[in-house]
Image (tube, rainbow, N blue to C red):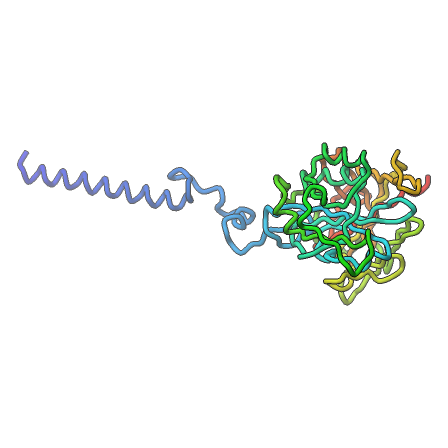
Length: 345
């Protein structure tokens, strides 16, 4: 073979190699980062994964159904709810607000924060043993409270919560001189979380959010739940498109956000028994059982919807369905859950 022929053959081989490398590069780019050559990326064409790939599609909070940063920690705070404690501070920024019965026919609030943290919240009050059952569905949230019965304190130490009481983390708490004790303890939630370790991020606790079927529910203007000495009421505001809250017959306001209002209200009917514990006056401590199943009423969009709730185990979320068994979506926004005793019979 002549020298000229050999050179031509070598040149042809080089051209073929270059073409193969170029084709391989194109296939690798179309497959996406980290995908094998010639394989389509699993993210391609998926709207859910497009959001995680950094497009404009927002992450939605599993607690409110509204846009919120992913991976935000959960902080649960026991809030005083008697007249000397009002108006409270920070409640307008909560994702979920639970209203619970306590001794003497009074009520107390468990406010759950994740999507947004106010700079200050309170007044912070004591915990109850039923709080631990309620919060188990959140994983391992931070729990801010101002004290508890010795038996409850022992239960908190072994529960799946991060103890953020003043006895564990004192710096984030301050007493206000404008109110009388014990209704004057306030906390900085961001400082609480900076002091905490291994607090769970917001996760699916059973809530579903979405549009309501036009034929779903009956028109409702107001609803009130009573515990004896306390009442929690909700009135539909068509102009503000929310359920405005009243506490003991008076408009519920906050020091930092005006009138309280909910996008969705759940009246959850459950067994409320007397525990073995009691307050200093001898009143037994009510225990609302949040594991099990039962009836509920869901308020949204100016209507009341008969529903059922189910929570098979303490670490499972609470699901809400229509009486026919279909998933019942909430309106996006702050959710109030009020525990009420099962109707007689």
